[in-house]
Length: 460
Image (tube, rainbow, N blue to C red; front, side, top):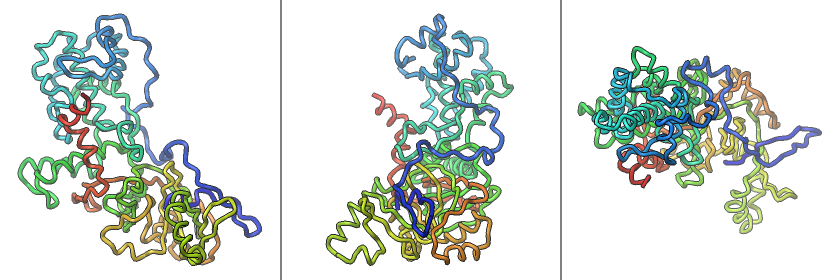
């Protein structure tokens, strides 16, 4: 159910004023109280840099829209940001030991499921043969690009589909590289940008096991290595400090897990979006602020037009049987009640996709292995239990509230972040690595960015 009832107006004299769904102008963020103290190397995006200094190195950086060294393209934005901190003067001519440490880190990028070739690994091994300034730029670009990949992924949000908007906190990788240069262990500073989730650890362990010929989760290196690398990338799209209390929905697993104090407290099956692209559940973060009890459903215009009204034109009693009415403004509305498409509970989580968690009268769907039948929203099997946990009330209190039949909205004691993800390889609540089918067909899109050959062909 998309759109849903995005707004229910004031209830006065028993009348419920309904308005059309409205999208949030920006992605919701986790409240500051849930995020914990900021990581030392994480900062807001840096202010725009002034024009480059008139040095030979600065001129080289600005010589073309995207400069090339020994056939390898460089990232002008990252280079400009880094060298602005150094007056556009060379850095590595007097820091050979730090460069060697970082070259070694790049050569081990595959420990994170990243191809070292993405960061000029082949050229780095013979970089001493390059002209001095070419070597300077190549080293910096390799280290900055590797740091950027660990911090937010090789495929950051701006390179993904518009329904994949998960992103970590912004990191100034130029500042991180400076911190690495001044550290006794430069490589460790860069490596610290990687996620530390249980799934990331389990996926990295799977890499080691596959190399040793050890099957993992019923997969061998031949069948599982790509999935592991793709999902390591997805982990890099997540905030580094996940809220200790959160709701986690994995569309690929068709399950929801609620965490309390970073420990799984509740798990249930869910129905998610269909395999058809336009109805797939998106990947995003929001915040559950309140719960609607006995919500009516304002049917989204496209669902009404394409699915419901054609049936009503063939069957005059169709709308009445489904407790639906066509309002004077042309909006199709289904009355609240146990037979409502939203069931008796809607978890209010404003987001630009108009995707929500909600109850459903179609309980039989939860017994299916393939529960991809919605238009993008997530139907929760044990929605009363989830509501009780979120409201910090006994389940009986939730039942009493729905039993009244009246529509009302109750705020949570504290907003709870919710993440809707798509992980085809992940650590379950026991820390065991699980694999799921890529029914949405998203793995290949990520793999194309991780595979140096595919990426090179795409950039030509």
